[in-house]
Length: 103
Image (tube, rainbow, N blue to C red; front, side, top):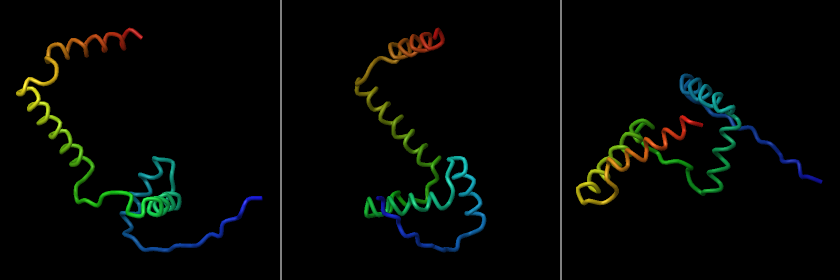
């Protein structure tokens, strides 16, 4: 026999525009606010911390920073003669592209 879990109501106030935007994003992910909030609380308990990094950077800014770091690493590797020749790599990519297009 399964145990019926007691439910508790949580109420909080938030900015109306933030709620609207979050609801739209969650809806695109097939989630509602209640489910998202429960997922959040579950992760707080499991990780014993906030389940995300708090930052002022947008997702786009973080992605651009990661891309810049990869480019700088690639340039450093090329200058140190690490890795493979660019023309060899391009040829491999073109062959992969041809195989994909043939499928």
